Image (cartoon, rainbow, N blue to C red):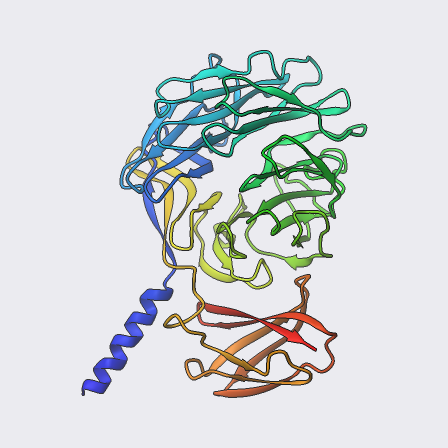
Length: 452
């Protein structure tokens, strides 16, 4: 009897370790259908969220919500930038009290930078006079790496993107010259990524501008896409995400067709990977999952949540432990907006509220460190490195799926296996490194194998 009870306890323990879900929290906005499309996590307790109007007749919204107790309560506020017609491009926060936003005119462009030091109660404009060149200026974003060092960037004025850098919290700003632009090249509001001291933004010419020194110097990089916003090359669209200075992905489509009043958007999407900060990219692997993404910083773990769709059956969330090669479903049927994660156990994603007391934010409940039952490897592969045959064994799982991918993410082998021990022939593979990903139920584990 004691042995039976032990088995039951172990099963319950496994279930709790690997259960992944979202807990609904109230964003506290007074108006219903407020969505959140920009989350800034400071720590496990402090998170900012930027709002937008999710109704059919959407109006301009200048609102945020803030929690300092892990989401138990959220406090909404107004972003007062002196003109209620201005759109808020993005929000960047570094503490519970200090944040910046970019603001622009949706028709004329131009733009401004605003800072709060009192948790959003008041906002003060910075870098007055910037982004003011008629018919050229259009601010695309502001980002701060810490309390002092930040940058703001916008469309080209002449042959250089309009970029400014500050090292005193925005009290003073210095104009920075970017690599030369080409005709019809401009940026996209919000289409950027950052990690550590690095920052990347994308353009309508399919280029990526990168800095590794907080905006002081820039390089211009090629990408697999001809356009990141489907404005010049109308069938190309994409977003970039980075985990650290080197590891990143592009989620993009080269045959994108925008949604209309009666049809959903279409397109064949791929995930392109880089291991050198965007200097080169893989050929891409097909991707059919959710389109809002974020990394767990410093890892190859990606969380994906649903974008706007025509049916709720395609909504939900999933995660990848191997940089987008394989995916595990968290849930389906619930619309979830953009995610943000601090680490493998702490994350949020946006939603829509019904009223001040119901919905609007989802907090992650689970642990994406995942790969094992007890902190040890579930699968043993030997030998490693290998020439021809590898033995795969597991005493914890008796049936599983195996996917073998190369460094570009291309799936080379895909099998379903049963039994405690199996043998796999890899003699046909070329020499190099491969990723063996094992999936069973809602668990996955990835191991690197070297083929001699």
